[in-house]
Image (cartoon, rainbow over all chains, first blue to last red; front, side, top):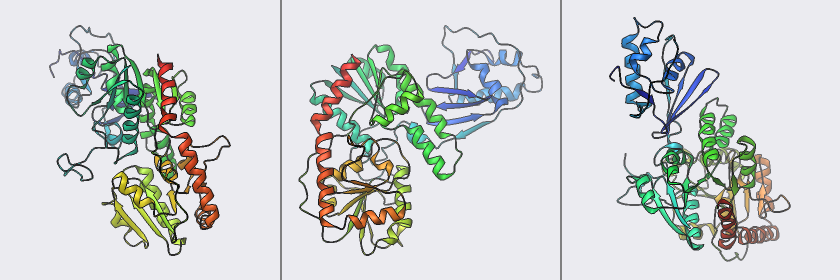
Length: 135
Length: 335
């Protein structure tokens, strides 16, 4: 991820909810969801708008020792399609200083069947019902 | 009215009840004279294909699909309908309570389903109970109960079969089915002397787990005609569901064939008559109640009265004409 690329949460495919400081992030495309603890939520919320890695680091009060780590985390979030480049007409969102206290993305896959693309059709396309497609 | 009906994949009515409900909706909307086209997400460019159809109404099946598609299709200006099938967050909450789990999947589903109910111009659920839950949980949501299933008409059976045979219909991928059969085989079936239990559905992978249980036969998945033929030999349909939300097609299917039913309260959700009972169904919770119900149904006169009551109830409430009446009313409200 380029430091000056404007990033945002990948709506509408990704939705999230913050409750008691913790965040649940849901990827509607894969059916995966993630839990973020309070410390992780602090970084996630930086992208509830549009911002760059450079700006996130700039406003971080413990930036110097963390720069490579934060950059890697943001890269991972982009790779997972939880963050995505903002629209071309988007402008950076103003945000105050913050403190990086760690980041853990806890993955859950138990709702894949309900939320995923094709929850009921593991039927073999050549042989049809009731033959199950081979993995 | 030009109606786009969106589903995740090719519908396979013989595989799952949700797919069956979509097929029924498609058939009855067409029967009402609407121009209906089915769009499948698994194929490419669904939003573009829907836009080219220029629908006035877009019906989207299942919460994940609605949440994904609403932002993409809403700009078309058509009225958006959410076909809920089930209140998944309620079912998952009940499952977690029953199994002592503290998992947060129910909360995640509630978040998604809230978006669906709030963003849809109209949501369709199967039962009045679900309407009440949605209205209480998400005030302001426009939600209506539709019949959800259309049951074909069958002749009334001539009488109680000579030997006791219980029948179950449902696949194990739906967790309440698997849990229910596992519970029934361990808690109730050992108390049944000399009968046979026939389990219909794609249980090939799970059947070996129950290999040491006597008197149980797994048929595998059957066509509609084969299934009805198999059920004609049964003396009771069972629905030992210990959690769930929404209307259960298996209950209606048994009753439509004149097959008396023993089931839990979850098996009869949304199926009460005016007096609060489900004709043809004996509700049982504990193993003792299940066995008592089977004993009652061994009396040919009681069996015949239950058979007729359930059969008549389904013919009156779940016919194609009744379905179309309720669906028309819901669509009128939408416009």
